[in-house]
Image (cartoon, rainbow, N blue to C red; front, side):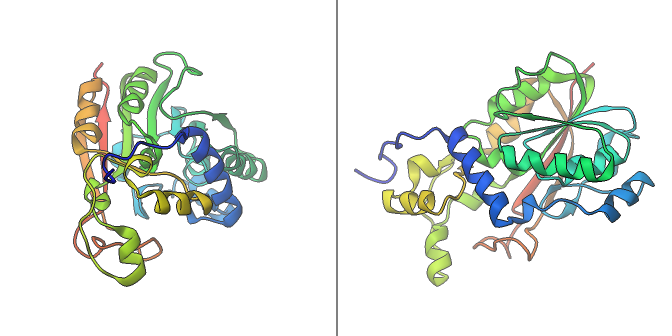
Length: 272
């Protein structure tokens, strides 16, 4: 049986990634380190920026004006980073994340800095905890790489946004997933190996998948651009902005890091 034909093991990626990201918090992953009090103080004065892709500041005009008093959903965006800054800037913030430990980071920052932040644990593709049309903006970083199917994420974001609301979404260029990254890490060899869409569960050789799970690393999924961008349009959004950037030097460097922008971001509006 080939790698492409191998059946996926019995694993619930949502449950597995919940535990994996709790472990990332314990190990100090860069996306689990909360902002400090100085950054909160700056945000209260109107001097703030948040990252949607890599360490690249999100264009301020994508927010459609002042965030003060607006209802923002930080979708799969726990970790005490973006949510507290936007709350300090005056927004009414709800942080929704799969990882209880990531959400605890947001509550810690809120308690230390007298911020009001609502937290909710759950799967980014299932937002039944929220009624229709209850948010003005959804801020969704590259965390959809941990979702087996990205299309429900767009549909749910559309549902919970008010007419005229915005979805700010980041994602990985699917080209990142076509190389044998394990081989590249081991000896620097660049070898094409996989197809898009990609799934750790379906496509990794059994030994590599077992090793990844033994290390407790999150499972990843490489989505086609037709789902990442076309899926937003199919959900009803109008895309009004596009941005991209390379990985920062603080992040893992793969075979494409010096060749193209591995991160992409869109600003989409729900017609109203």
